[in-house]
Amino acid sequence: MQTDIPDRWQWNPDIQGGYTVRGVYNILTTTTVPVVGGMHDLVWHRQVPMKVSIFVWRLIRDRLPTKTNLVRRGLLSADLAVCGAGCG
Image (cartoon, rainbow, N blue to C red; front, side, top):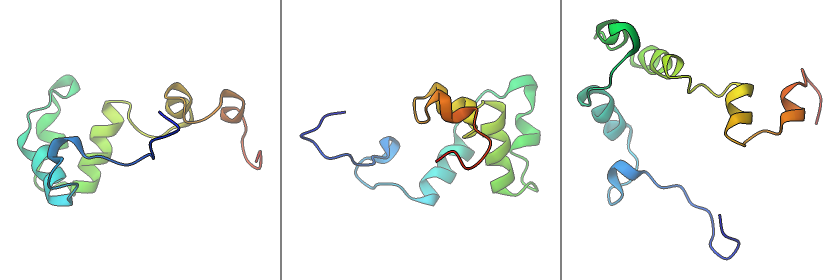
């Protein structure tokens, strides 16, 4: 992070074409990703809605935006993580 350069989002798999839903779908369906316990066929089953598959995939890899994960990545301060509601 630098003060003289503005922040911007960048989609690394396709820097020239940018982010597209089709691009993400292609990466998720064509890339072989090891899933814990051999659950790959269940997570990416064609009858399971894609949004459910993505949610389960993130859940297995502990990539959901929970308070614990946000604190670990420095996106939320530790004192706000213990707050239930209305802490500012």
